[in-house]
Image 1 (tube, rainbow, N blue to C red):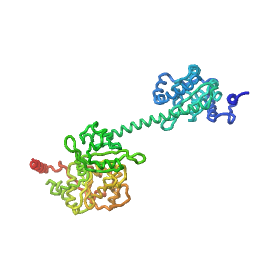
Image 2 (image 1 turned 180 degrees about the vertical axis):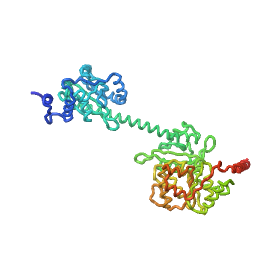
Image 3 (image 1 turned 30 degrees about the vertical axis):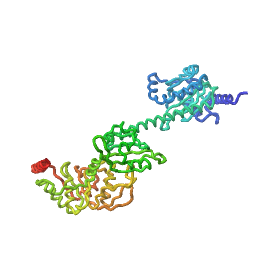
Length: 544
């Protein structure tokens, strides 16, 4: 009497014979994937008596294919060898194919390899169902899941002496990238064989994903290192004990210490013992901002502002911190440049007797007596800032602040926070206590926006809303703050032309261009050259 296993093999052989004669498959006899494969093979004209690999790559084509799949082959090879060692002596072969079914690698017992070669079951052969009939590799490619095909489940009779167990290998996107297969004698079909193949394929998949993540992390680390090394501020990374882990070149120059003199040493030894703010940052994760610091170095004393941001782990426990250093003179220069609180010029300081400059001064003096928005236009170097300060000094707002912002000198993404301010925690890197914008700082006075033509369109819309509503809302806040500001804008661009080409909002242009003053160039006021020459000569003489 036949064993249950032998009976199943006999029944499948009978089902195969019946299908060849009738084209019908009795329900429940076959896995649906295998049944569908039989139908596809029959419709594709696959010869059930053949089973030879018909599509085999040339050697150079195989070499190119293996080079393209080098990462998968390299990752799969150790696990394939482990599988082979387990089945060694059992007439099994271990096979790796690409996502199209081309065999990349195949090795096993000599006897089984000779049988495989007779079928062209070798590297470079395409082993899909429509090429060689139903098989485990082709079924995995069709179904995208592990498959086992044994004996008469194969469409071609020459494969009935084989059993094949295969599983998909996925790439980082979860798409099929390769197939791992173990093939051997039909009488050696066991369910645990498929389980071993699945486990190996999943291990290869995980390794491929880890390799991809490692590459991404390496690239991200290189990007961060590039940013770290090119920052204009000194940056020092600390571990949780206050030992310096890394310092960028700017920090090394500011402190006049080499990287070796800083890395591995406690921060208080480098900055001095008066660093309680750094210790609080490390112990209780308390950030700090703009703390004045004087550090003795080789050439004297470095006077700087320091800020710190703690680093915490997923549970919020202290894990170190980042210390930022900025030279105090650089900070003061930036304040003067971007905030422009120094207003030294009056109309009497504008030198010139030519008709164009006198006309510009006349209009500006009339403008100063009012409170309308002013647009100053002229080429770079014509003195738009001088006129803006003179108008402020000649206005009823002279006792109020004069705040200046160069829209073209700061990054696009910072224009909004500079103009309107922000609430604490509004965005990454924001001060905990928040910061007022230029509209708030200029309350009761004059706000001068230089290079207004360089303002991003999205911020132009926000500026228009503030002008129309005379209210400002900080970024990250819902609190409306009334504004009382006279707006003077300047541009070296022809804003009318910028409007025409869609680079500047027309409605904002009309709001700013209530009074327009064009500052003449020196070539338009030739008779003033001598006056200017004498002025600068006198000033140089006094300096000497």
